[in-house]
Image 1 (cartoon, helix red, strand yellow):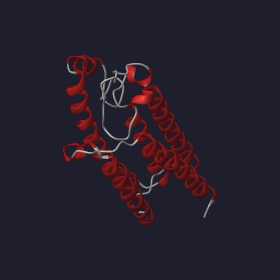
Image 2: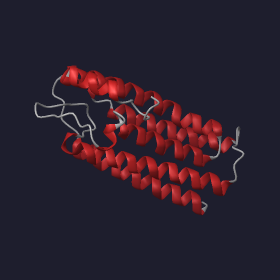
Image 3: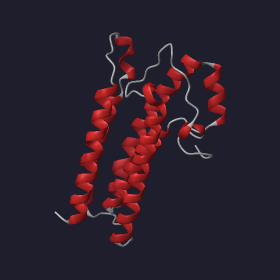
Image 4: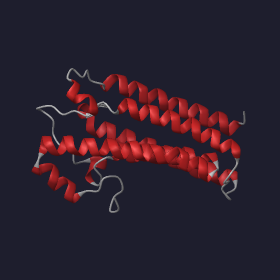
Length: 190
């Protein structure tokens, strides 16, 4: 194992431990089967693990290597990964007690419109995507990158759809107005 591979193993493992700790700390007990669709965090984990191992396998085939020198590729990849992680943490801390890995609201729930939520509605997912893009970019193979981010982008898009329905149902016109002023994932773009 090379030094950069060890670095990514440590970085990825530390991130996974943090995500698991957040998931266990904020998960809720679902008592009604009608709410099962809002427990999509398990599906996200399954897709992430599957996509990661598949991308690592594809990377070993060297089918579509990126024409970027390894030092620069790793530097950019680490910056993307850390930016994504920082954005995700900023989003989670901005939500505070309202953050949960399960889609839920309560009677005291307020719509957070500060921090990263001033510009985008789902900055925690934007952060995840940037981190995974960075990890895929570090692999140095275009097909490995696509193998990693495509299923993750799909499952996050589905999760966002569920959250938007839930939040729109809970907040009504307030959420409609907020949606008009903000983008889903990228400021001024999407």
